[in-house]
Image 1 (cartoon, one colour):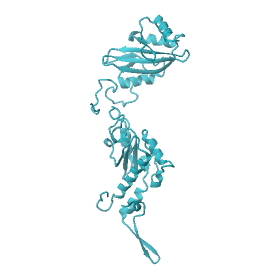
Image 2 (cartoon, chains in turn cyan, orange):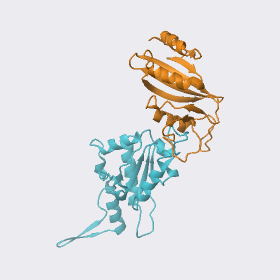
Image 3 (cartoon, rainbow over the protein chains, first blue to last red):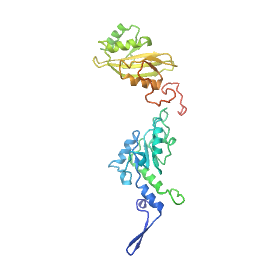
Image 4 (cartoon, one colour):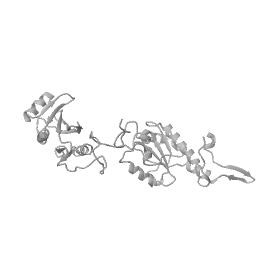
Length: 176
Length: 151
């Protein structure tokens, strides 16, 4: 998919005398709607959460891409951004939050701690060595902490992943 | 009171206490038997009046455990570090100071949580940071965690 095609409505307009007919695929319409309205869960356990908040504010403004409706309950969220170190005591809580989210649900692992346990704490009795031991991850962002641009990039990558998902036809592989 | 004066006053009250001045503060080393009485005196003696316990921790030296109490007097503006050696590493026990300094309630629970030191007469002796079901005491040198990477 070309850069310019990404944001536009995935359909063709056929002009008729008094208007037009839109022709598209259900998969494309559903995925277009879903991917441009991802509701993240308000969830941050350490310093990555500060960068996540920064990505939400006016300067980086993730609402440009449809992420602005951050939910304080997992039952209304599509996406969980694991922003920060997950300790053994937090792991069951994270698992429960993930289980409470309705399908389809997505996970972004933000920062070194969630990927592998972190640059400082990886060899500690208290830290989970990678959040993928607890829940499945869709997109990983390296960094300590990653900049807001990196988070936006990860979210746009996730949108691309969603746009290539399918409900009705055979599954498409991600292009590139 | 200066460190030198502190040393004189404490020695006059408890001759058995030994001193070590290698660190930032004056270190006094007490025995387990005398410990409780020493702490009470340090708190209530009008000349010493250590009314603030600003750090309570433990060190694992493998052969023994060392309890460390950082005491400060807000009235007299002096600091003393009191140390107590615990020889029994299997079941280390010491008297609680929670009734003398209330802050010790949490600090002693933390030391119990991470080092397994049992504080006698503590009002609420249970883990504070780790899960109740946690096995072992992670800051002990002999603690084994199979998830940890050894180099």
